[in-house]
Length: 96
Image (cartoon, rainbow, N blue to C red):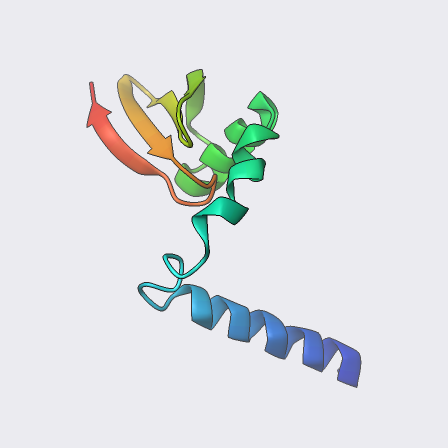
């Protein structure tokens, strides 16, 4: 393994470790994430949902609100309403 690859892997491992620490995501200024939501396409939202929940989920509809994205997703016969304010963290609001 060459030194560039070793350095890259160490940086990636460090970043992954920091993301697991509770509260570190809250330390990121919210104002810096707003352009991500404003400029995101429906395809990017769908990719984010599938990355967060798994490839077996289907996105039925999406809606943008004040700094949040709400989507109705489904897997099999179950449907869920999920919300996110940064396209990284999705929270299940309700299930049907």
